[in-house]
Length: 117
Picture 1: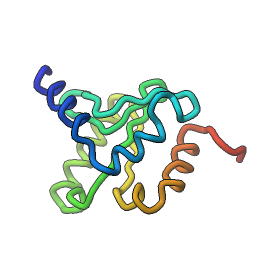
Picture 2: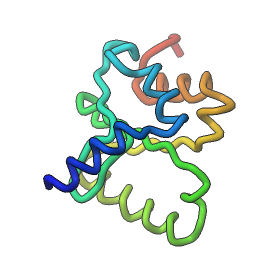
Picture 3: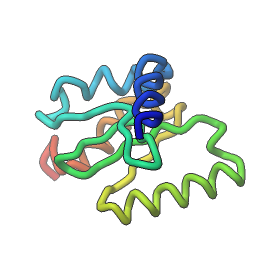
């Protein structure tokens, strides 16, 4: 467990550009008062972002997640996290880079906040 926590700390200190961009929108309860944590250990995995209150995990995926082995790994990982009671939401790096507004709107839908439907 200690190794996983050290790895999570290292990941927090070396965020990707896309992780930094999303974090700037959701940190410090900026997203409708919800608290998010980043690079959070849920053994045996580390998730990019988590809102424990809503049991929502946000993953940001780059191109390395698009090959057969990575897709299978992500499927198994997501199934495990779902079995632990979490909803896993995935966004591609290019979604964060080119459509952060759409990402934000999608998060509003998932959290049931924002503009009235």
